[in-house]
Amino acid sequence: MTALQRAIVTGEFAPGTKLSEADLARRFGVSRGPLREAIRRLEIRRLLTVVPNAGARVVSLDNQQLIALFETREALEGQAARLAAERMSDGAIAEVQTLLDRHAAVIAAEGGRAYYQEAGDYDFHYCIAHGSGNLLLAGILLDDLYQLLRMYRFRLSAAHGRAEQALAEHRQILGAISERDGEMAELLMRRHIARGRQRLAEPVQSGQQ
Image 1 (cartoon, rainbow, N blue to C red):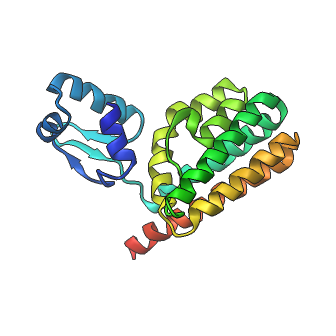
Image 2 (tube, helix red, strand yellow):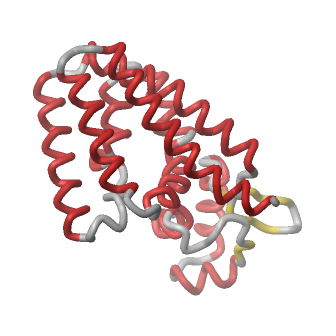
């Protein structure tokens, strides 16, 4: 499932692509049983839509759905940043600072073409959600929505100049968290995500005209 999920999230399989079980089985070297289980799990993670007798397609959000997704993300991650300012340990904050330094090095090596996009503990947004200390909130962000959000964040990371801007915004958010300023951390996180939503909506809107 990991290889198929990555191919979807990174855009190898574009939104709306119809997936052939036979082709996927050959590509990933798996039998139909495990493949169908992977498809079922990716449907739960909102990366695929499966229609009986019609097969699976990579999810494709229209403009209204995309805005709704990022409005939800803005509210939840804003609250996560506020809680992280109250609850993250100094050691955990220092680890995220080290992570951002690593991101900066990768961005520089790539000539600013894209942001560092590994998942889990290597992902700034994952770390802040986890650092909120709210298991329900983190579960929504990191289980229910995480891979779908990563899919659209990959699209955003390709925008010219966005990698450096995103890194600067991440550093500002972490700065507010380290100063234990929950109100500012929430405000900066919400602004950061709102900017991303506006950039992501542009190609969707133009494609509908």
